[in-house]
View 1: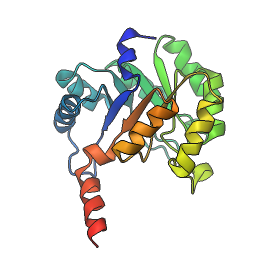
View 2 (view 1 turned 120 degrees about the horizontal axis):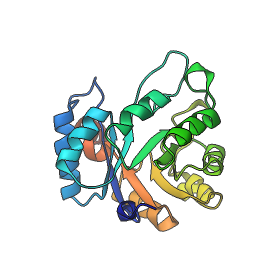
View 3 (view 1 turned 30 degrees about the vertical axis):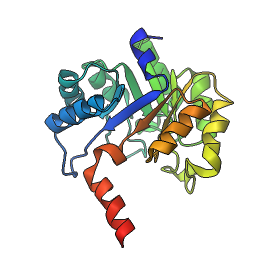
View 4 (view 1 turned 90 degrees about the vertical axis):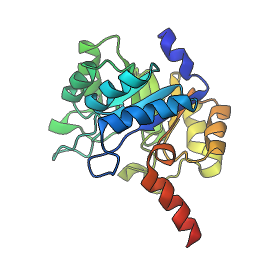
Amino acid sequence: MNKHLEVLKGNLVVSCQALPNEPLHSSFIMGRMAKAAQDGGAVGIRANTKEDIAEIRKNVDIPIIGIIKRDYEDSKIYITPTLKEVDELMEVNPEIIACDATNNLRPNGLTLDEFYRQVRDKYPNQKLMADCSTVEEAIYADKLGFDFIGTTLVGYTEQSKGCHIEENDFEIIRIILSNVSNKVIAEGNINTPEKAKRVLELGCYSVVVGSIITRPQVITKFFTDALK
């Protein structure tokens, strides 16, 4: 394990992302958002696009989990779907690259196994995170050799529809933890400090929190919904 990545253990990673249709979409703003997160105690940043990551690098000196969200017509996968996105990310060298590790086929009908082999053959030393949506996917990604297993897509795929990460005291996380050998990063709908603390108590290596910290429109709606 890269010594630099050991800071993630037991700590908070903040996801700083704003898509083109969102008010804060700007690499400059994401750079400042990352600095604010670091000032608040975050030990890592999850970021989308090489442009945002390059800007974030100017503002913080903590590990970055890099992704590129891109839609392809022939696939449901949009988080780092192909080797092309990995190549782009490698231009800015994030400490970890995360990609969809669900059982859906990638663009051009590529399986996860084939994609994983492509990446490992080209970048054997790059740390990889598997964004999974089910226990089975997490176990499979672990066996393939992903360095980190994430719960990022629980509830967001057809195969995990209706699943909620916090149900039954994070049952899905507890099952994953007891069935994988690599490090588990909790992510997805962890929207209170209490939930973040709990997943670390259960044994997750780290926790990623996004919208409830870095998306003002989501935070505002959280309040306005409560007032209705």
